[in-house]
Image (cartoon, rainbow, N blue to C red; front, top):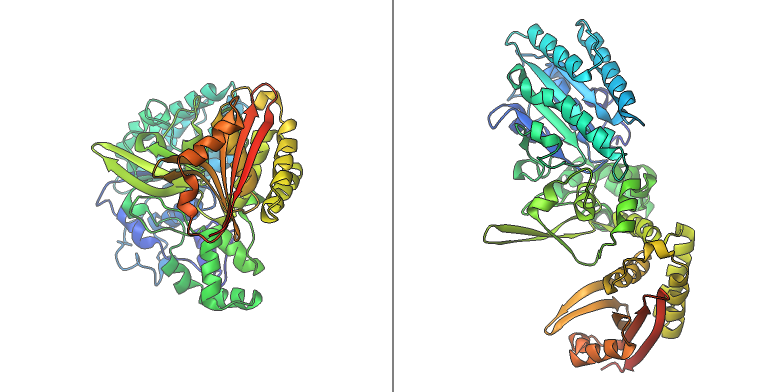
Length: 522
């Protein structure tokens, strides 16, 4: 039976203790060989193996050949050469103040000096200490170069997004990381990872020497597992999971895909499976939501409260997808970079490249929508789950009055501060996430030959077509449904079709009028 590690991020420990290592060294060789460059940056969501990749590169450049036996890179690498490695894990550098961050940096550099057996020259300015450490390490090497690995470069800043001191932290990171470019000639290889990428007028203005492989085809499956990799490396675990759940091996793998697959990091790339969630699933022999064990970052909740987003239809231009400013973060960019949204489709019109995004899988959808309902309504999960369940069950029971009553009760207590910038999309989005959060088959902005339907709920026996209006009569919503023949799209479904026109009041901040009309199944 394969040994699966879910909490080990050190390559040497993984290999020495016989845990299964999904061989990614071919892709790492493409970077580490120097054939296409020597300084790289890749952003990926949390729990995708960034730290393990950094640790693997550390062992590689330190010449620990015995750890790479039987791996793709072993016969290709020149093991006669070694380099001193400076490894900075910024995941441990979350502090309340910039002064504490600077002290933390100096402590990290002091520890690295001790590990590499070089002298430590302290200074109040951590950038100067950083520079001196790089120079000292390079001087130890035969070719006058060293290797620089920085994991989670953005972690010190992420906790301060949407806070008054974000600019102060941004400037501190900008000054510290400026050393990476100024001492480029002393670096045989440089690799930075993070969750996000801040725009080139910010931190990356001093890191523009890095090759950004975040959406590069050669790195698209470097983090996460492809289908073939899971089938090759974990056949015993798949069989054990299947038996525990009364499934065939093929059916168990199909559920793995449904729950944990779906991430796409380049428009033409294969989708990949979340490695940590898969490992936890194997450990428990249970399909469950392991993503939610780490709560949605507070800064994302704050952004979504201020700027409600229609999750049923998300698209964005490539330039906006790749980076943002820390003092003006955009919800869609952050949701993509943190793994809550992933690439669905891609179109190019002339020089404009545009992506449509979606929630990647059942695990993320379940945890994310529960959190986002709370963000939009100001209520905790227990309250929102109760309303969502009542509303959803009413639709299954074809009790439309009860469904509307549940929505009215749900909306009646939403704080004014969360609905002070009202539009139809905001109300539509709240309805969408309320129903989608309990697993209903809900679609928003459904395209027809003559327009877009606000929301469609597709259940085994019923189709509900819902149109929303703000401060306009429900009759106008119903007239739009009928006038544009929205029901025609589902005429051959064999299901009962129900038309629902809903009118919201900006003053009362809830539903004030509704019209319902049922069409017989054909």
